[in-house]
Image (cartoon, rainbow, N blue to C red; front, side, top):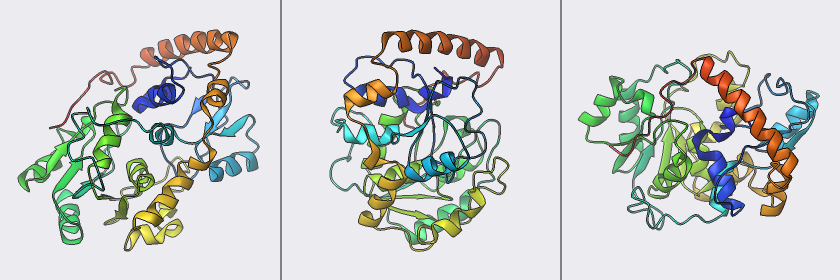
Length: 302
């Protein structure tokens, strides 16, 4: 229904879990990333009948405390992908993905909506190589592949991967395969990919200062080290990480396929028609705004 419901292959993962051949417009709004808090914008969308789907119990509690109507905790799309037990045997990104994986996957914060993090690549590389076992891979968002800091990783002999634009329907499943192929996941701040790695039982750790130097959206980014000090210190071992990932991604709140189809408006023909019509209008507004003109780009492993 809203363009961001389909970002990063979320609707594809949900449709696969529901055993549907193709994703459908969702009657509601799904969070498209992990955040320490829900932020002030939730509840602003105009269609009151369309529910807000949050990932975890903390966000549900925050939304209710703020008086947000029609909010429901259903878990993250990535948790549904994992629950569905998607096979990665034939995925070209999945070499070495069986077992516990090897080496370290670094996932520094990426550009978003024209904002480019001030990423001190040389310092970050030093921290990773001093504290983590190789071989080393860095995940770079497609918009950042031309940033000068990428050459620093290349010069150090790191493997560089990218999963394309947020409109790439394979984004989530390709990232899933890459995470499986590594033993440890690190970042310069807690972010979505790090939490995904945690759910898979990878060792996770934040190295260096947080990439978020400001918090204009009121999402508590400036307090993440206060909330999760261990991740910023020695990191979390697999069992601890899995518990952290299960809560943050709402793994204990996942719906059965029949329930999920109903919740997303996929089981009711009238709701599906409404969601499709609203999606058409939202897509037209999105295009007229000129947002993300190059989101059709799909980038594979480099």
